Length: 281
Ligand code: ZN
Image (cartoon, rainbow, N blue to C red; front, side, top):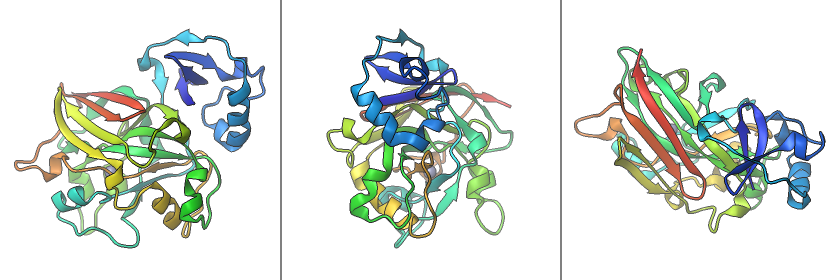
């Protein structure tokens, strides 16, 4: 099953067409794309049996963030060995560095992003897990049962702000407006042949800059949920950005940053693409 946010309304996406959930369910489920995660089990049970209309064709540019207002957005760094190496850090043990992208940075899949003046804006394609059940002290073996689905995320990062000061400012440098594109939809874990091994990558103006596989995550999705949920409570509708593979601009020689006129396309196998164009401030 795929769910999306079409112009602010929750839709099911089937064969490239959108079925409005509030209309198709006769009001049993509302139009708010965020509220559905509070009753995710009831929603998936309804969707599995519902006799749905064919739905309407739509342009992906009309999609908003599939999960537009999570109570928590948890992001982790240094979760692929090759990216930790290019960033000049050891591979973390126990838990990777954890930070947030403030939710005001969230956007849908097809956007124009303003590059901050004097900044160095970098790209980080990531698999994003959407929490479907409250997770507290969850065992690794049970962790996937707490995931509503997966989506694509771009952890856009302004490196000057991120790395200024005596300690890194991960959350601020990664939370400028539009710096958290997500989408195009949330895909339930049962849709993947192997939910633990998905290709992900990014290209700038058609040139591939990142390519990896989620089987190479140092802390895979179930491990992250198990270890994070020992410390914090993960809530339905929360987002978990799982980290980026090698190939970011920071790790290049010479370093490279996004420039006005660039187009960045990010993908995760079995989900879809994000498409960001960049303009100067
Ligand atoms: Zn990241």
